[in-house]
Image 1: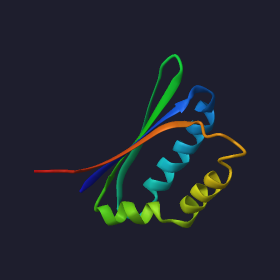
Image 2: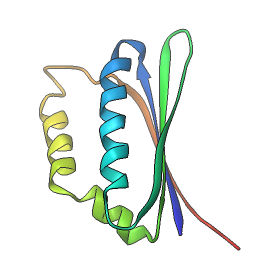
Image 3: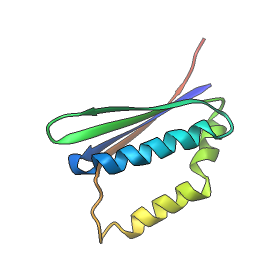
Length: 102
């Protein structure tokens, strides 16, 4: 089993939009083969918000298959194309993968 985390530090004005995005991601993971659990943790301070998606998977390959689903790849293509027209609200993204030891 592996645990995947991805933390997004975002500008505060993007809070509602990111709440919607992470809610959809959690639901998508929970419905995906190989996902054992998924949830989103949230905190905010004066200037920023932080969202951490935490998911458990049967294998790394299961998680990679979720990342490669067509709608996820399209989201990244769209974000990249709109980068100049609309600056990103994401200030930092940190992804980590953990293996569960006995």
